[in-house]
Length: 409
Ligand code: ARG
Image 1 (cartoon, rainbow, N blue to C red):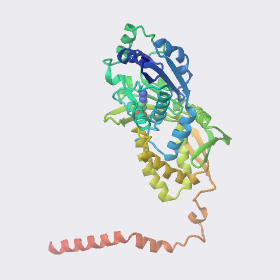
Image 2 (cartoon, rainbow, N blue to C red; image 1 turned 135 degrees about the vertical axis):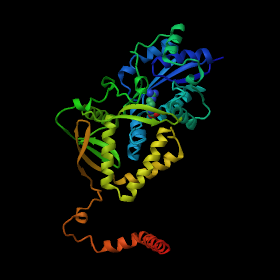
Image 3 (spheres, helix red, strand yellow; image 1 turned 180 degrees about the horizontal axis):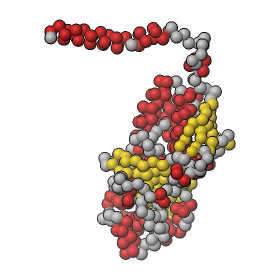
Image 4 (cartoon, rainbow, N blue to C red; image 1 turned 45 degrees about the vertical axis):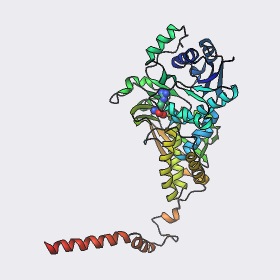
């Protein structure tokens, strides 16, 4: 009888190499490895095929999903304005649903009955992968070795690999848990577990130390079409190129570093360091353009929606009716978010220098301190009287109480 198949989210690192063998021994599965190219860089992608087969996988799929990740996940996230706990631009969180979706697609293609992943039992990523799988194919079995086996650490994994003759990937030992894609890189664990300790400068990969950035500012413009970025310095760029280009520009000015103690979905706090250079520019410019083009109430309400949207992404609730409904709202708000934002970049800072849009609601004739014809200052008096009526009524009552207290004294 043919063996059952499992599709494993495979990175080629130590953990997933051990998982390949463990799934064979423990479950007698045929292992189909899947590596999604989300922009983790050539270092992580090279030699994967041989590595997977040598470790015991029957087959490996390497799929370049960068364009899909950017167009269908990152761009909607930018339009939403989502930022988790005021700082985190959700780089790891946003990539998980699309990887989950690919796991399901490959499982269906090869006729697998299960999927497996190498996320630990303490983190958010297990939740995000598994919510995606449950939403898209609830009949697939899910295997999370880190929640099942007795291996507790990297050293345990090394020992297991030695005992089982598993070729250990020849990557340098990483002092942190790192997750990289086109949008960001994250570092957790190791020495970073002490929130009182500043990270070493040589940890950073995408950004320079702001104090080493050029002494001269650089000007930059980002153009938008209905809330989606489409050009950098007037040059039209595809989704992947656009982010790559902005990563380089922001990175050389030390823009996009974040150090955050965040609340994980599973209840604990954890400390993470993030580099999201291009994303920081995009979030900044998008907000500037919305402030220039959206009416007050929509802009304010959108800020509320952004908080919820960030939670949905962080919690892995991407494939949900609420996220889709919020997207409808957000798309409708973005109809006029078209134009260009000009900025100056200087030693870790972004300074807005100009905004242009055919749809702006900013009206110099109305706001001017000079004489104008559109706004009648006399109208303000009636507005203040009516809008302030509740304050007036409350003030009258307080006044009466004060008089009464004086009388009984
Ligand atoms: N704390 C971040 C998040 O939950 C980053 C997680 C990084 N993941 C990793 N496997 N190192 O989104």
